[in-house]
Image (cartoon, rainbow, N blue to C red; front, top):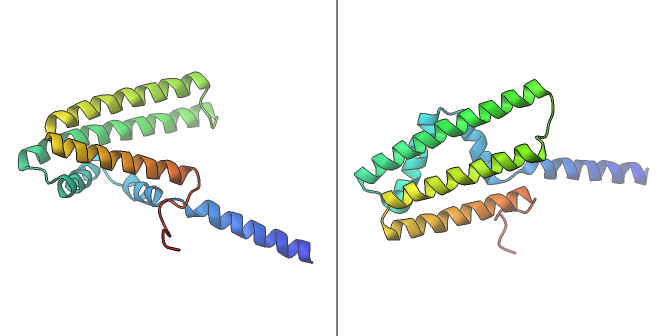
Length: 152
């Protein structure tokens, strides 16, 4: 009887932990159902609040965010279709390398475009925010508490 209860408690704990996810996952799930235009608008407004963008900067950032959202949506659809066609769950090592390489190229290009739009001070703040967000996303993927419960 003790073994059955222990096994049940262990399974419930594992299920609860696996379903928890991070707050970034929640944000991404909420944005998954939005159009690229809606995602670009929200991201631009968040950047405007955080970086105090001028009207001209907002317009340029909005266009950049829309371009990125459309590209990201197309890539996700393409990967989903490839996965369904091939009936496999994991891409090969070469495919993963190619995907990561292309992703990094896009990130470098975007960083350059953002640097042209923002002032030096705004760009430094954007980099800090971007770095902080990426670190929290990595923590969430590793199963950390992603910033919740800092108090003891």
